[in-house]
Amino acid sequence: EDAAALRLCEPASAPLRVAVLLSGGVDSSVALSLLQAAGHECVAFYLQIWFQEDFRNTWDACPWEEDLRVAEAVCARTGTALETVALTEAYWDLVVKDSVEEIRKGRTPNPDVLCNSRVKFGAFREWLAKTHPGRFDRVASGHYAAVERDDVTGDAKLVMSGDSFKDQTYFLADLSQEQLRSVMFPVGGMPKAEIRQLAQSAELPNAGRKDSQGICFLGKVKFSEFIAEHLGEMPGDIIEVESGTVLGKHRAYWFHTIGQRSGLFLHGGP
Image 1: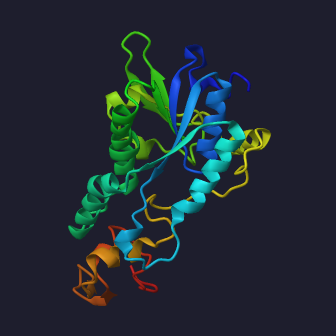
Image 2: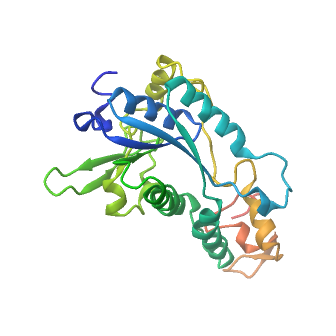
Image 3: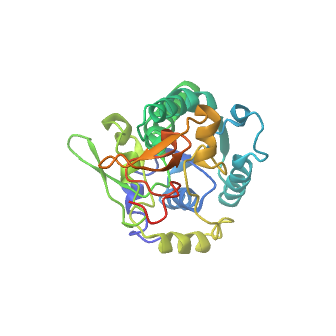
């Protein structure tokens, strides 16, 4: 790999011992490939945060099973050990419960922001400290972001990625200084097209796999279905504040947020 592609992998510090969060997506897979090219010692970890039992088997497929199979194939291709870490309980306690309660109050939380600070770089780091004490120097992921480090103080600063459209620094904004000091984002300095090219060059089995979208724990479940399952419905009127005119009906205020038009069925309305 050329020096530009490896610049966020801390090649000058190699070999570092890196725990790589592998999701099955192309970004984290290329991150793993780059870290190996930079000379680091890598172990991959797949975080299982899907809580199928909570949905009482209403939905038929476990969305993480395919992701795990892809992650296993990537590790087989790169010769990397893979561990699966069950963090469903931590995710429920640290992310889902708070999100549901905020939604009940009429607010609009972002579960992925909470997931990054509390689970991926929170509960997972705590799990590493207990199960692999002192073994890893960094935790790496395929996020579109970058970290700049102060050589004197050791402080780390989160900076935007090389792809403004895909940039994910917003979702990482809650990371503490302690967390930032130990993270790496190897693909954060390059556009998506280049990441795809690197995946193809490395012959990764997921080089052409589509990007995932939506809240990480929901998988194939629609957000509205998730909310209905946990909060139910509380129908009411949609009222124009200025005139008091009833414009329509809603299933419950928690299915909507400020500024939203989708799902209101107000054709030609405000």
